[in-house]
Length: 132
Image (cartoon, helix red, strand yellow):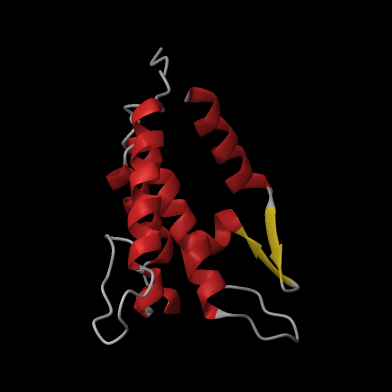
């Protein structure tokens, strides 16, 4: 855990994120909420998701008990998609299975069986962290 924090701090101080020919110096732009734009248009969701990744890493560091649960994963997805256009779409519902009453059986069977398999995998998965 200690190495991850040092690594992330190093990235935020020294490196740049290049996407769609837009360069954002992470340390400075994070503080000022500004971006440098070239001739191309940028998708606002990309900017929001970039800032949400910082929030997600903060959440991972704060909740470092080593237990990977369904709720924990859904919270990470919620943090990453908060404020984006995908958050408003029914197909990107991260708090559980959403039902579409006007379309009979739409994704319900597939999602329910996938959730069962997912729960079995999570029960077997655990990482012990050394908190030294």
